[in-house]
Image 1 (cartoon, one colour):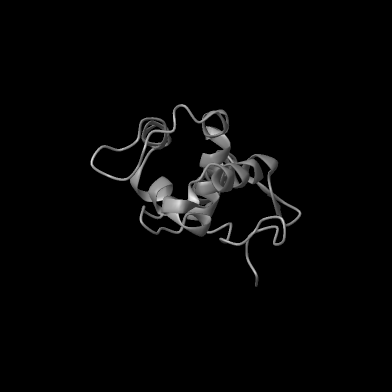
Image 2 (cartoon, rainbow, N blue to C red):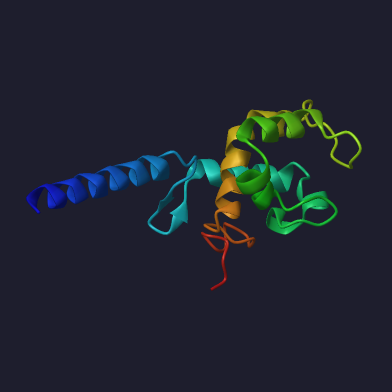
Length: 135
């Protein structure tokens, strides 16, 4: 019985450590009810880089796909970077490799969209609503 309890305790601790490591791997953080500065810069890049024209407010999808879903379900980070930089033939997605703002903030843009896809952020203005949610 004692071995069973020790085994369970070790297994539980390993799971908690694994979960903590996973949580730390996210490129964004929420601290004191606000999103991290890098994800905020990603939001600014999204809005200033013209992304919303095709992908809608907060990347929820319009003519182009929902980008939160894209980065959480469909694309690796490397694939996301490739599509943003080089476009996607046969679609309306044009290359942004000459857009300095987008290219200089690619990691921040990815962090913002991942936070959207993870449900951490809503689609609202992050200045007015720190987590982009009105509720």
